[in-house]
Image 1: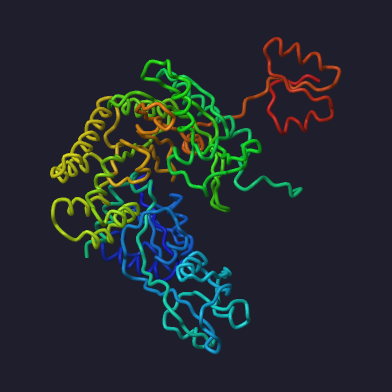
Image 2: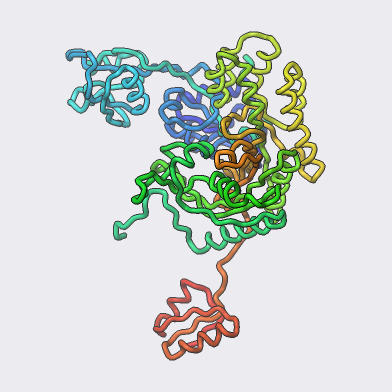
Length: 209
Length: 374
C-alpha cells in the first residue's frame, strides 16, 4: 500500500455487495478481492491499489469525515441524519429505501404536540415534525423500533420501511413517507484534493453509464 | 478514578507529546522570524460581538461562551487569532510603515460535540501580513509554509488553493439558481448539479464542470479555456496560474500544487486566494490561510491583509521525528543534600531533588537520570 491508495468505507451488507458489483462492472476493482463470507474487515486490491473497509452503515460518514477513508458509500438517510461534513459526489441509484412515520392501527393517528416518537433517526424526525409545526420528543432506539408503541414507550415510530410486512405483523400502519433514500458516493474533503487524480477517475468511471 | 474528570474534550498534554509539540512550535516560529515578523501576545478571551462579525466561519454552537460580570456582555474563548491581530494592527500599529508583519502563537478554543474524537483546544502559530495586495505577499506566505515544513523534515504536503472571488463570480453566473447551486457545489454534488444546470451555453457548461474542477496545472489550463467567455473569471484564474508559476520557479514541485475551483467556504470573509496545506495521513489541514482585504476596516483601518496559521496538533501527527524526553542530569536524594542541588545548578546541571532516599529506585522508573547522588 502507498500514499496514493484509495480507501473506501462500505456499509456491511447489501449496500456493500451492490457497490462491489458496480465497481467490478466498472473495472475499479477485480474479482476475488472482497470476500463477503470472510470475517475480515479490510480487503486490499493490490492491482488497482484500492482498499475496502467494512463498517456499520451509521459509521461510514464518520470514517470518511475524519479521513480514515477517502470515499464511502452510504444511504442518503444516514448522510442527512449524521450531518457529516463530506462531499456527496453521486447518487448511485441502488439501496432504495423509504423512511416513514408509522403508528398503531387501532389508535388515533393524528399528530399532536408532545407526542413521543421512537426512531434511529432523531435528527430527521425532529426536523420533519418541526416542519409540520408539531413539537415532539424523540427516543433514540437502535433496533426493533416497531416494539416501542406496542409497549407504550412511544406514540409513533419513524423507521425504514420496505414492504410494510413487519409493520403489519405488529399491528402498525404506515402514515406517511419522510424521505426516499438511495446510496450516495461520498468523499472526504481534504483527501479529494490530496488524491485528486484517483478520486476524479473513480467519480468519472462510476458516473459514465 | 476519583470521578473528577476533565470537561468534555479539554486537553491535557503528556510530557513526551509536550516536548515534541514545543519543538514543532519553536521550529515554525524560528522560520517565521526569518521573514521579519514581530511577535505579539493576544488575549485568550474576547467579546462575542466583536468576533461574531469578524471571524471566518463563526458559529454560536462552535464557541465556548461566558458572561463578563462587569459589563454583562458575552465573552468567548478565542476561536481564531486573525480578528484580534487585525484589531491590534489597526489600533496600535498606526505609526508603522507598511507592509507590517505580525506573528502570534497560543491556543484557540472551540466547542465540540461529545465523542467526535476531537479536542476543544488547539495549539496554533500564525502570521498576518498587512498592506500588500501584490502577488508577492501571497507567494511569501506559501514560501514560508514550504520552508517551515522543510525545517521540520515533513514531506508529502499538498498545497490546495481556492479563489474566493472566482467562486463568487461563478455563483453570480448561476443567477436565480445560485443558492441551490452553492449548496450543491459545497457538497461537490456532481449528479445533482447536472440536473440543476441543464443547458449547454458556455456559462452552463462551466457551471456543470465546476464541482469536478479540482486538480493540478491541467485543471487550470482547462479552466482558462472554459472561462474565456467571462473577463472576471479569466482574471482570477490567470492569477492562480501566475501564482503557481511563481511557486514552481521558487522551488515548489508542481505535483504538490492543487487548485479547487469550487472551494466555497468563507465567501463573505475571504477576498482572494485561500489555501490549505494537506497531507495524506491526516484528515485535517496542517496549515491554512488566505487573503481577507476587508477585515481590518472593521477595526477602523482599511488595509489589505493575508495570513497563514499552522495547526500544531495536526503537524504533530505527521512528524515522524523521534523525540525522547530529555534526560535529567542529576538525581539527588536525601534532605542533607538539598544545598548540593543548588551548587550543581550553579554549574549548569539539571537536578531533580527528592528528600526521601528510599524512593530512589522508584523514581528511576518514572524519570531518566544520568547521575545519582545519594
